[in-house]
Length: 110
Length: 122
Image 1 (tube, one colour):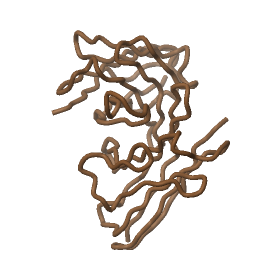
Image 2 (cartoon, one colour):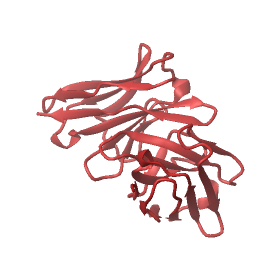
Image 3 (cartoon, helix red, strand yellow):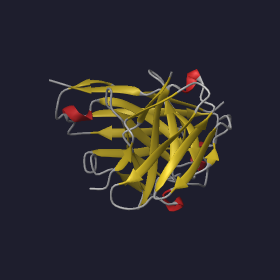
Image 4 (spheres, chains in turn green, yellow):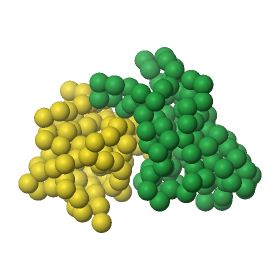
């Protein structure tokens, strides 16, 4: 059974840079999986940050960037701010109409 | 502005049924694929179903295949999820989402509604 893997937690200092990653248990992640990243704060619906590997959604600050690093998708936050303290979900398209979310990364900014 | 408003959630016994609705506004509904995504309390997001703009193409996650049925009424700008044979593990907040663009990757979900809570418990 294929699963999408993410780091359970990460911490970053305000102003620092952090890279969250997203992998597949059964294969390498590529642009054909159209990696997308969503940010969710408690009690709120998710917000789209990145789609199609590295395309920022409308209104998303350019401190958020997406890429492929090795065999994983990556979300890099440069110059982290206090309100980046959230859970970040990666979702990969596996083909045949199937999308699969990762377990999320709890990012703490302190 | 683009808006998605879910309704129909509630408390249901295991084995029961429930129908969720999503009212869409602010965009040309019949141009877009739509999806349902759920989130169990304290858990991760789970994509469960897509429906194409015409309703002809439908996909389900294995966890709901055979029990849930997605549909849409383009004349009423509405999306539906008929859930049957409900299990305790179906307890979740159910989000209605739109494909981010008319064309584009299917895992681009934007925007999202605020969700409707389904609780399956005896």
